[in-house]
Amino acid sequence: MSVPGDEIGPPDLPAGPPVEPATTGTPDGLDRLWTPHRMTYISGQDRPEGGYEQPAGCPFCRAPAQTGDDSLVVARGESVFVVLNLYPYNPGHLLVCPYRHVADYTDLDPAETGELAVYTQTAMRVIRQVSSAHGFNLGMNQGGVAGAGIAAHLHQHVVPRWGGDANFMPVVARTKVLPQLLTDTRDLLAAAWPTTPPR
Ligand SMILES: [Zn+2]
Image (cartoon, rainbow, N blue to C red; front, side, top):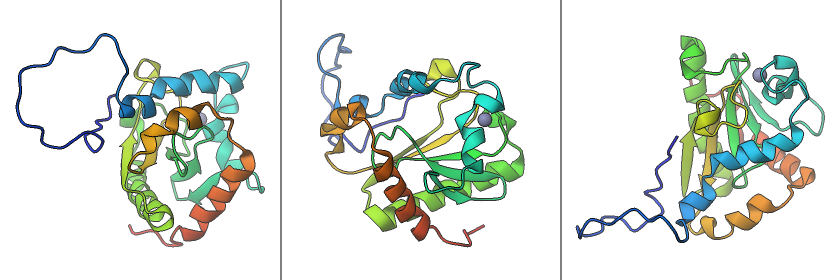
């Protein structure tokens, strides 16, 4: 999928001559940050022997069952839950997932569809409250061809953005994430998560 980056570039440029698509050179900042194919690559390191297709090998099926200190689950709803991305594009990068192991957005029933939307909104509110994010990228990659690293289990990305963050993201993305930092982030977000989300 293509998540527009219109918050990054200069707004409302005056109309000029048509610009040929660049075939070489340096991609813009958003392209460096929003690189879903990187997830496929990174996720491959932890790829289970049987792949992600079966729930037994699926990290999004296993995540809700983890309740210890190393759990990255931020909030649990009736039919969806919210978990920190193990390989975040930015601090606080959340994934809103149905408990059910379904791949396609059209597989969600009405209750799941509604709660996924509400929890996406709540995730934005909580991240804004905790970290004063300037903006967000929201979205779902549907299918491996569209960049989904774990295509078998639907997950909605909620990526907080700050002005200038694209400048350091290439470094962050190549840095091994320390689990302790992730659990600290989890504690921070979970503490700010409303106990009764708006319905
Ligand atoms: Zn799953």
